[in-house]
Image (cartoon, rainbow, N blue to C red):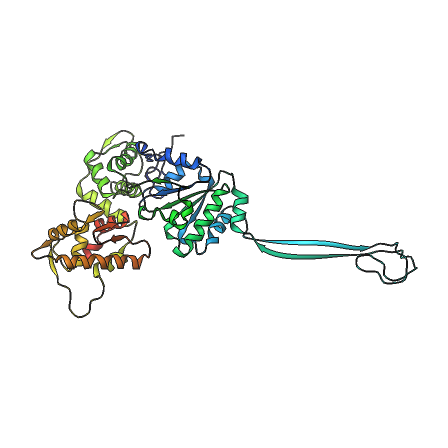
Length: 427
């Protein structure tokens, strides 16, 4: 029987832990650091990194996936929910019903004609011998709730199981202090806990309970550099017996916005555009033009949908009275400051972090003729931050602090740049 050939979805795996295209970034010693931190007793391990940067993949590679108990921060509505979710994963019921049974009997042997109590004690001065006996059986049941934290400690203390609390920053601020206190109690009693969060919220665990300071070991995953993303493409296309020119590899890496998950998806979509679904028998050199790359990037943008977000940012807040001034833009469209800023963000060179001066310079570049004044751009960025936070409370896709603009979600940056939504909004 001929050996089964791998399919491209087994080589490039955007939503799964990769095997063939796994890159450990050995020079950063992330696996080594995480493994060492996990060995420390009574320590919370905090893994931080941008969205879609490989935090979960790293944890799954270092630890046995069968021993990881996943809990999502956004699903926690009360402190007890953390432990209830863990118990549910372990298939331990949150409530327990018990039934108690008791028997009471009276046997012959008491003398007298008086009454006999349920406890079998003769009353009065009875003289008659009771020659027969009676018995009663009674049952009672009651339901009580497991104390989640206590039960988790009872079941997990000293074991190899790990509670993986993903997106800690999504937990409501009103609950974080109590959850931080309970996490400390759990780790003090030998329960292993790993949290994951985005970079600008990495200290949320410590701030939730200052007593955890010195008890949290951090691993920063960070955005991926081109040289690491390049290995995903190289390992995957090598498995397909395809030689990809370095300049094509670099182009794909730059478009991936520092996200290994995006890089996996881009490579997968490129294979589909090239109609390559399994390895060639011999090494082939494939010529890839700009049209094929653009088609691949457009296909990749279909794996995420920020159409509502982009439409809202493009429209800006509702104006009262005077209409916003429109400008001639380099893409042939007319648009106000909001469109100009969005075009500026997605123009070359690709980046996800901008100073105020960067934005001003880019806005001038995308405008033909007059361009928005600085105060108009600043007001626009302030409103964009509010709109983004309003649509995704606590996790805006872009953040403006008065001096710097950061795109916090690489998928949004990619969608803005590679989908056709912005172009359509300009018509």
